[in-house]
Length: 77
Image 1 (cartoon, rainbow, N blue to C red):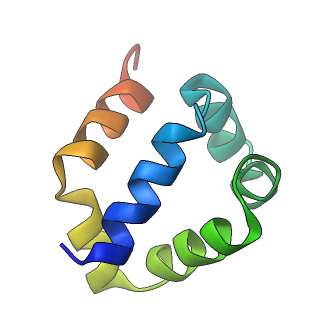
Image 2 (cartoon, rainbow, N blue to C red; image 1 turned 45 degrees about the vertical axis):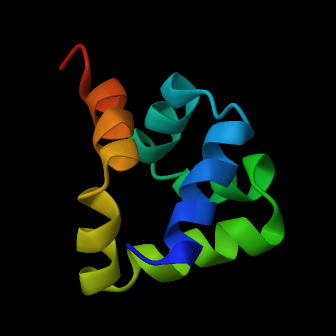
């Protein structure tokens, strides 16, 4: 995992992102708006770039931090 991705995950974690609100935004198609409001412009842009790159997304989703976040996002389904 590259250093930028680690920084991105830590930034999101340190910003105390409300996982339930993020899940609602993703389900309603408003994830971009949510990210823009809850992350710095630089961090939101980096995340959007990673998510638009399949290889980078796969690397990101394979990290322990991302697995923990995905677990929280999918709880209750």
